[in-house]
Length: 199
Length: 153
Image (tube, rainbow over all chains, first blue to last red; front, side, top):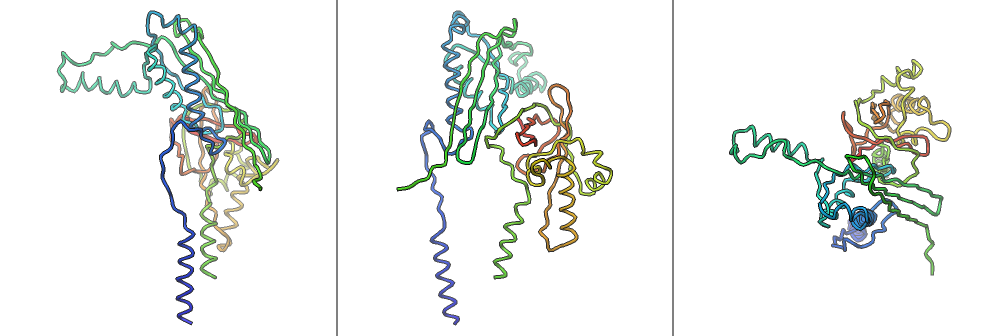
């Protein structure tokens, strides 16, 4: 009886071990289309940033604006009006990187003002930095334009089908005149459907 | 067999936190932006006292989606029904120790919206997203009549 119990214990252990899952890690193409689920994903982020950057760089208004100079921009937050917790800072990061790389614009980064102030305070007041070489207060250049936008979604679903429509709106405002000089929209539609797989 | 049942019991009781699915695309009525003014844990005693006084404190609060869906359905989504069900549930489990204990930790969030309006939201404490004063938040009105508070970042 004891032997039988031992054998059955070993057999069940082998069966359980055989059923266990293994985790396999692989590198993938970062530009590959991701369709894991219907929610906002990496492909949407890339599409939004690329479309907006291209549209802004190639617009005739910006062409005139950047003819003789490189305007200074700052990015205001993108307002996320969807149900999802989306890192909109990541969208604006990608966007501003593409715009900077185009060589047509310069940026001031409002998210790092506190860190910059701390560093200048250190240079001015700690007594550790050569006073003649320390960075001076009041020499920074202010932004001329503001980039801002909204991300909204319309979601419809029934038992078999879900449809998500994202609309990303971006605008460029002249801070002095208050005029909106440029605006564009990127739309994304995603659907998911339950399909019966058969032979 | 007894051991097996015990394991099942543990599995069931581990889901006491209402499930927050913050990355899911669902229909939204509107989104308001603002900051957290204060966060406070609500005690069971406070809930019972407020119920006895006719929901004077929490009567005007907005109810978080996760507890709203657990304790109310259809037209019964008002504050009194949902918070009443929570108080009722915890008292029932106290009087009968064999009933699975549900420990739902509620937080009261006082929010100031960009236009100056102030709101009180009662939702359950999500260990994955805890709030503190001055946090910038989004107040999401979901289509089912409940709300959810999210951090902006």
